[in-house]
Image 1 (cartoon, rainbow, N blue to C red):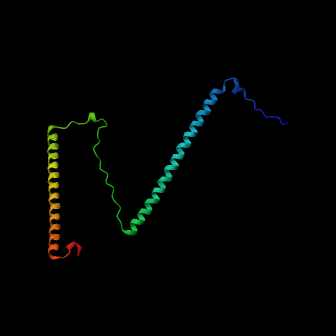
Image 2 (tube, one colour):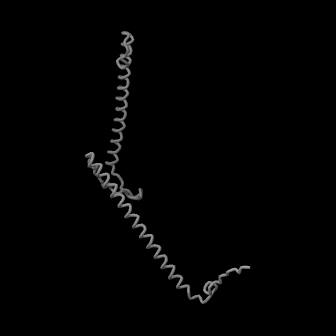
Image 3 (tube, rainbow, N blue to C red):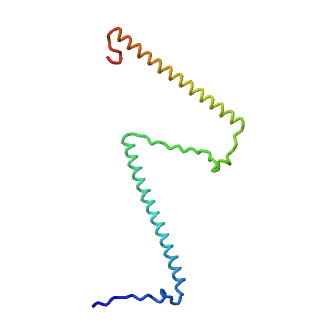
Length: 148
């Protein structure tokens, strides 16, 4: 018969002298610092890897641009005025500004209506031209101009 191996717990685990509490805290703090440092280093390596990959991609893009004589698009960065994060704190419009906006909206509505009328007239005109061509072709026994 084989004997079973039984491990005995250390005195500190059972209750011991209790002096290891500070050592455990220091060890835990040290391990946490090491863990945080490892995370930071891993993040730096990841960022460096992605920076290198992007440099390689940009080099390939530039080679293609050079090969086909394509100019690189310039990125225009416009500084938009910063809006207040709270809409209740925004600047109030003057009566002149409100009147100008209302007038612009009316002009926009008028322009939209006029544009719709123009488009409708163009559509009607094209339809009438088509009918005229079909009528002419029926009277002359010739196919319409678009079907010849």
